[in-house]
Image (cartoon, rainbow, N blue to C red; front, side):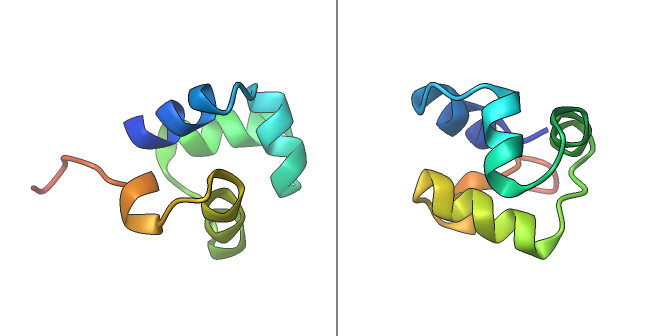
Length: 65
């Protein structure tokens, strides 16, 4: 759903398990949230901080554009 999130995760060389642990959720929950876009604000903030990018960049989507 969010290609930039996947790209930043790959660039950092992090698995879903590693990212999930860093932001405090399970790997399965992280994978589901990546697929359906249901991240909560604290998770979004943690992801932006982890990958050192803005919300606009990390969660850019062509939908509606």
